[in-house]
Length: 260
Image (cartoon, rainbow, N blue to C red; front, side, top):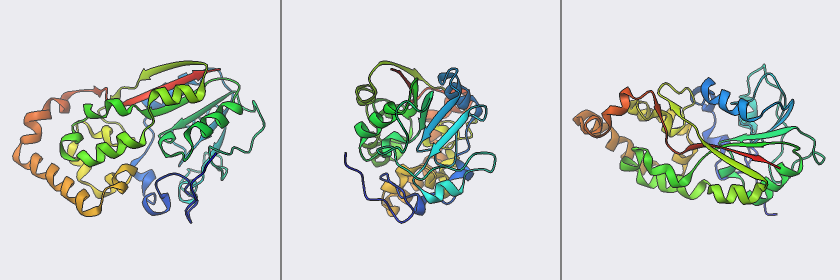
């Protein structure tokens, strides 16, 4: 099992949240409709492990949750009503076999240094379902941002593991559910702005999506300028304006559930 060297902040993935995560919680607030889907997938589990827990998005407050998060910046942004997170990584979980009824991880698996090792560890410590909220890299081109920031979408495609890799790493019985993204989604990942393109002109909103940190700053500004010009000229609305009236969008967001 090979782990990436951790940053000064403790970040163990391919993004340094000590650099990009300072205002993460201001833009990445859990959406209650997506949270309900995650909570339902956990079934009747009472004890839940949240791996790569970040600032605590989607942790159910009616369960006994143990959170694991390597980034000090992200741990510091956890709200007071959530328990403190343990400083650890997915690939080396400090728990005995079959400790938890269920496990969850949201927007995290694409950052694990050893995906197979991390999935094996999560399965080792979990008796019941493992629930993963992630993006299917094969569906990223559904989102209009591919027209304006192609390198960004290519970066996402390289980072997100295929559903086949997730299934292979977890074993057991796998189900995959498309997760509809609400128009007013409060969790500001890129596709959350499918019908509100102006929001992605905000540098803070872009910084809260880790993929933007892999694009050179001048190129990122070029992409933002390209989107601004498309909005100013009416091009965006001619091509994609119907999305402004669409209550949900089915893009790449999926929920993977694995039973042993």
